[in-house]
Image (cartoon, rainbow, N blue to C red; front, side, top):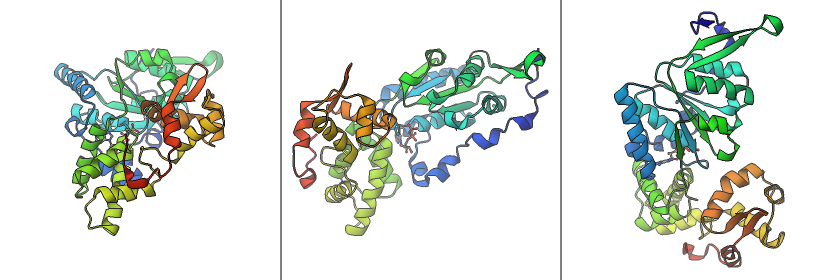
Length: 354
Ligand code: ADP
């Protein structure tokens, strides 16, 4: 039975507004971050290959007058997944609804959102690996056929309604690609993997942010912050804002290399770009587990943090910098970790050896 999507539904059942988050949520969440958030692809710094590919897909969809294919954004936190989703909506001239799998409690929450999407609009679901099984199946059909099957009633009286949806684009984001089910992953036409940024790419972001914040910054201060930002734009911007405070209070307002050094030290970031938890992780593996291998759960328990945080937030950077490797038997530190942890004066002169 096919019905008009709104006709038979009791709309009050689907409380769309409570759980979806309009782009304005970003303003209340962190006004400063929102000021720095790029709005178009041309403002999005670095990641050139990714931008070129997206531009082609966006231009092609616009030329055909069709909704963009579904996009799967993968990468650690703070690399620009939410930003890219908003940029794609702006470039397409489309509406966007932002939500997160954790906010979608029951299938009707998802159905409520899907049935309210207008033609060509974008639905962004953050941390999509957390989506419940029952909702994944609803999403499969919605993604493939722009339809949903909705069961009304229970037992023998139950009946299924097919609800037509407007063509839409799902942008699913995850920090944990391995935790997304294959059938869901396979339904995204455009997979986009965002890697940690190089110091040069972060330098572009820091310069742009300093310009927006009306702050002068020297070249060596830009590089010092870029090298200590774990390859992550959100961290680069956060450090920049703290260092700007210091330059205003302790200096003449210009962010110099010296001001950056003081700020980084206050934030507990050493001259190798490692923070306190990074060093704790390496220290525990060396001192408690003889350099490894150690399983993720045991490691996380030893530093009083969650396995998820260690895996998603700390490990990618430690591995990229060559301090840690993953083996089939667990995590091991490298020679470089022994060398760096053995050093005294980790903040001394902020020499940035990397
Ligand atoms: P994620 O959703 O991956 O956790 P966000 O999209 O929230 O990350 O990005 C965090 C912040 O980093 C944004 O507010 C934005 O200002 C900044 N940012 C991320 N990527 C870029 C980029 N390529 N160029 C400029 N700023 C960026």
